Length: 356
Image (cartoon, rainbow, N blue to C red; front, side):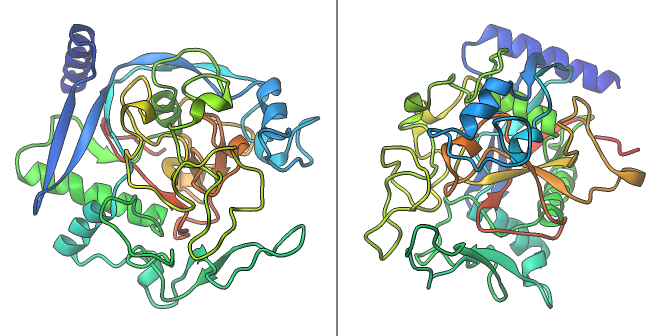
């Protein structure tokens, strides 16, 4: 414990002494590395207000109303009744971006790891290339498919190393973190008392808000129009090989991508107050906690015997309507071996989390 307290003290001194958070680079070999950003201890308001939930399902937010709170949808009810003050006691380091295709490939090259989607009988949810826009409500464009994985997410265009890795499950994400922890420990580079892991839900939302203590819709505030040039969500972007954009609610500008964008594509404008990129949009990010439909927890939340059945994802994705790309949005994933071409993850370097 002494080592952890010392690390937190150093976090505070470094963050106070410089206007920009400190960073560190983790060398994965073959000229590939992961950049981590220092996140100090602090406090924030977790969750959303009724006003925010109503906005999310309104004409601008575009989320689907449902049988949740009055004037809101079922998804919005998962954000709890009202915001709660949460204290993040331990500072930590977080990936500036989502884990990329190149970074995940290094893990597979060194370990021979086979993802859940690649295992016998495995499948992953991907975009249907034969999907047609027709009628008021065209068929759902994502379907489970065998033979697809993080190596080929069925985007319909070449996979690039700088894209966030997708079609990886909660199991796959944790395996990556365990590999990185063992690798760095063996090399003598792992700080005492820390491990690489997925962020807890509270850590993720705190980091997403970028140091703001108020309960705003987005990390930059409540005005959706200020998101132009900051994130990749459903916008005025043509689908590959088509002359149409998504027919659902969208932002009234082009963000440059109908599907995934390279990580940190938007540069300084796309980084929040902590210097983190793509915290909203691009891909949903899996976190460590199990899903409680009543709302998020300040402390890590796990099911019976410390098991995770439906892990939580946060932040929205490239296909999402604006109302689903907010700091407080949270969904429960079908299972720990489920994967999707809209889902990815980012890592933290932090004290280990005990599962009761």
